[in-house]
Length: 70
Image (cartoon, rainbow, N blue to C red; front, side, top):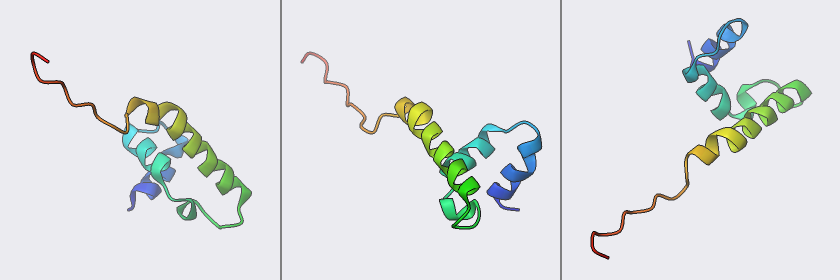
């Protein structure tokens, strides 16, 4: 069983962090038909959650500590 199928199966119950991670990263085409407005809305919501809540927690650049004494 794929991770997306597992996430869908658990939708009626609690969503584990692993399933949430799968949903936030799922490609649009994996959610359903290309012309589905519901799938478009779900994917947009997942992308918004990722950009507003997840991305700010993980900076895109990591600052190196400066050498001691400089």
